[in-house]
Image (tube, rainbow, N blue to C red; front, top):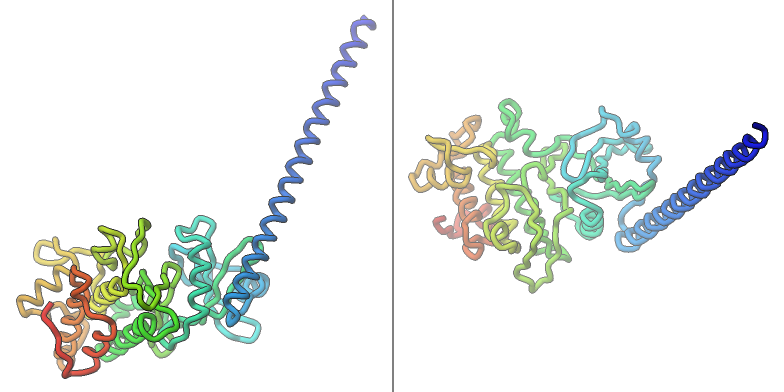
Length: 355
């Protein structure tokens, strides 16, 4: 018995030692891979931050710890909303300034390229009707944008709410229309760059403490050279109801793409209606079809938001409706430029075609 047990015991000890050695080797390999990956990740983040710092010298580079404190550790109470990019939080910096922090989600439908695009673009843009980006944070594998805080949220917050829309009388809506017009005009004509926004919509029009509009979210924007007319893409971005037919069918986009989106937005401001719903007697018409049908029947006032007082606004409302319908024409060449839109809005003598 003793002779048999000794070899068996020896074999078991040998197997145990071998298993321990293999497990230890695997753990060391995993640890080495983790350290290498972590080191590479940190190196990439440092490179990215340095690259941004060089290309966006006007922007502040924030520390993660400062933003974490400002947003109360990204608490639910500080959360303003969430989009394709990720959650947005309100924050208060140590100097008392209020900020909005847009944090790239790990499962974001938009990615690092959109983040980088927005940082690089907004660093070069400055206009009263564009949301100002204060800086960014790239740390702990987090990507965050820091904006000036807009206390009155976005335009859609008011337009589609049965009670809050009363806060937007016609005079206020005209101011918003003119502000968005000037913001787009700057992007297309007067900035150092020629910018196509590609995602203009009510939720991307933010309102400051005086309810003045500011265009936001430049993650999908593209730069055109001054002599460039149009470009095409196989990746269709934007929001359903706001994108023009040539973009949906052929992937073509130009400054006239933003003109189309502006026209849709203008129809929404006039009517308080959403693009996602169907309208008309049989509820089978899109917002654009419904508006055009009323226009050709000379019933444009029926398109107006019923919460508005039409006593003094009928003339300017119909004028805005006409401009909107010109902007959403199917053929991009038939749409006016934002320069022409601005002239039509401001000058009574500017000739206007029939849509």
